Structure formats: C-alpha cells, structure tokens
Image (cartoon, rainbow, N blue to C red; front, side):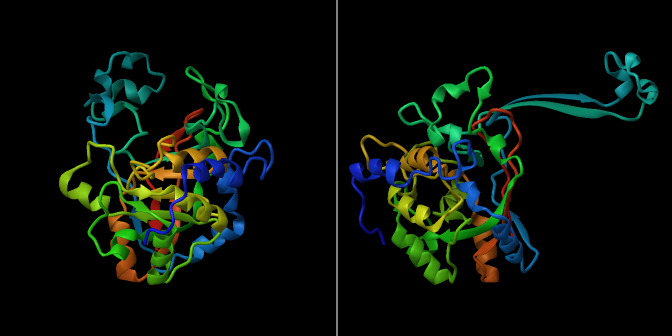
Length: 316
C-alpha cells in the first residue's frame, strides 16, 4: 500500500504547486484553518452521536520534560508580606493555604503533544504567505503566523485513520511511511471519507509502543510521507496530526529532512498536531464503529510563539 514515491524534485515543486500564498488574502495567518467554516463546525457538532469524550494527548512528565519550581504555603498568614495584603481576610487566615508553580517547557520535539503554527518553519528565509523570517525575534517572539492566530480555537470534524490496523500490525516499524493508498484503504475499511475542513489524525501504533516501553530516544519514526501532501491539498484538509512527530524519519530525501513540516507549514499554511496519544481514541472508535468525531483544540494564547502544548479532545 505504498504507491508511487515522488522524486525530490517533485517534492520541491510542491512549494509552487501546493502553495496557498495569497489564497485567503495577503494578510492571512490562518492558512488551512480557513477551510473550517461555520458549516464545517456545525457538521462537526453533528458528529457527536454518543456524547463520549477522550483525550488525544500525553500527560506531560514532570520534571523530566520541564523546568519546575513549586511553592507551597499551608497557611496563608505565614506567607512573607501577608500583613501588607489589601484583603483583610488573608491577613489573619490561619486555615487557608495554597500552592503555586513556575513551569518552563520546551514543547517542540518528540514527546509533548503540541500544535505547530505557521511561523515554526522557514524555507529560504520565508514563512507562510511569503513573510520574512526576520519577523520572528528572539526577544519578542513572532510578529507573524504565531499560535495566537488560532485564538478562537480549532473546532472541526476529526477523522482517525488507523493505518496500523489497516496493515494488520500492532504498530508500523520506525521509518515506515504512510502513503495516499494507505489513507484511502483506511477510508474504505472504516467507512469514512475525509472532506474539506477536516482534521486527519494518523495512528501508526507508536502510542501503543510508548505506553509499553516509554518514549523512544531515537529520531527514526513512522509517519506521514511527503506524497500525501497533494492528497491533503486536494481534499482541503485543515490540520493533520499523528502519534509521532508527523513526518516519517528518515524522509527519503537528501535535501528535505522534514518535507511535511516544511512544505505543509511554509507553502500550504497547514497546521500540525505532533505527538498525539491516539490509543484511547482508536479503541473508542472501534467500539462505537465511528471514525469521525468533533475535535476541539484550544492552544494557549502565548503571544508570539510558534505553537502551544495542547490537549485535543475527541467527542463521539
């Protein structure tokens, strides 16, 4: 189920043939999220037929995955400076306490479930819609294509394509690519069809491996092959995700280490959802015989950032 593999020149040509620059206006930062219309959201709401919700995110390990500092005050009145608090009740309260955290997290990578916004990747010094990389500043963040473009949330119809099940294996091997023929076979077997505005989540089975053995320390992984990009463009897909960091690695192209990230984000404005945990979603879909659902993603409104950790919720 692999089908023809485009050459490197073919994939480089996608920067032109699949480009959405100017499609929704010169000032557009939403990219493919423009496919999510009011009618698409209403259709997503109609996909809720059982009322059952599942998370598609991994729990973030602490402190392994983040810098952590916790303050615990069992009695507020013992807190330094409590006597100067303007609220009288706090000055004398000997019962009420609190805890507080400071967290620093690097969410891009291979472990934390997160969404990538268009400013995450550059090609020849350009971002989506032709904006220069200089609009991303080390001190102030991104002035273009930041995650705050999706401040109203990403709520659409999600479709889970279980490629591991289609191929009859517990999980794809690291380095296995997923091709358009795989996508269409999954549609046929599952009785579902991807349409404009959808978010397509790809199950390779890596989540099962990670549950059993922990996250992989390597960079070789199963995932979307670059040959899927024209298919996604033709279908009008708004967002793609996977239970890996999206791109198959190695990509098979000497000069394009991550073609789905690069062509997707820069040329298409295609938002990406990396490192999902799709095991509960797949079990629920199989039990209910329903492979589409309402998907809700609410990025944190971090000003000027290239993405956000998220907890995508699939509601069947």
